[in-house]
Length: 441
Image (cartoon, rainbow, N blue to C red; front, side, top):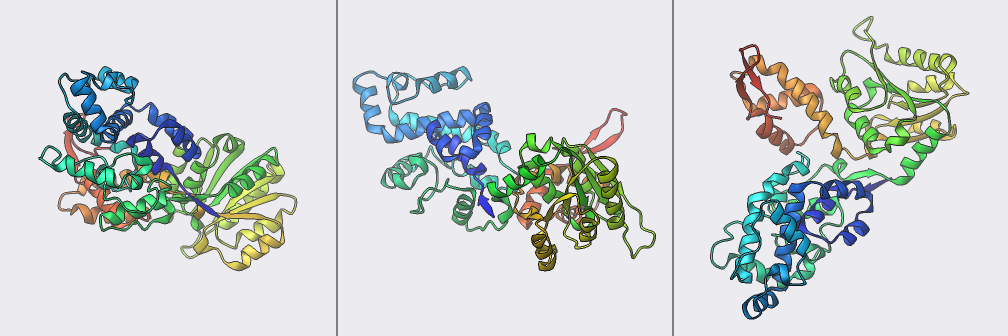
């Protein structure tokens, strides 16, 4: 079973200025993320500016009259957050101005948001179209006569269709809260740009029952280990599992052993650098080109770990039915199996059910956070091409390195990678005084 993630929408909600109590009640699974955002100055600057802009719109006339007839200002009106204004001014933003009116303040806040929103692009994954996110904050041609008045009129007429009634730059629709879940948000925002977001693995995640079953398995024994058949598994999907599970629970796992064939993806070489669990990567050479010995070596090593090293519980990561022989050879050991939907047949699942072996799919875990591993592998592959890069077309080179690393991505993701990293390659002089090509990471 899977549930929809809320990481993207929690970030959006924080930045547009949704009050903290509503953030905590709407996104309880994102508590850690929200704490990180509160410490990020770029995100918090936009949050405070958006809050001021929204209140200016909601209290436009009342604010204007107080400034005009009572000589008040934003920092003396009770409906504005004075602490936010003070903090913005400490950070070097001029907020309070004398002899100002509501309209001028709306212009000022919009100008500051426009000038600072791109500093927040680092808060979002590369696979997201930043232009679509940016468009929710950035108001084009805001200084032209009538532009902000039109935005104000649209907002006030449709305030119930704005997320938590906070102003954003969009075409309001009667669709409920667009920041309810990442699935809903991506569908609506991409749709408003005549685009479609198709990768469901980015916004679906394994449910609590799946996670709890894995934790119970780990807790049921003193020593447990993960054995991975690299020929029949995906390193990026396995990383999504490791990243999606509780760190304290994972720390109880003795080790991860990767049983690999020389012909598999380079992603396995990098996995150990992105997990705190001790990881051994065993590459098993073939005796003949037609026959892999991974299954045999994996079986022998697991049997040795059981009888010699006292490991009694094994999480097997494989979609190949050949691992069933391993399970049958150790009737006193405990097994949990992680597989991929498209590679694992009904018969083996039925056999595991009959023998009381819990199994789950690594496809159920959200892949949104696997970007750091994928980028490391892609950069390493790109570096291999740098000596012969002259004459290459950027997008063709990008397709080539994605194919060589066996990383699945949409055309848009590859185009984004090409624009951000391939087209921005720079020539520099290294410490040895020689020319070298540098990736702008």
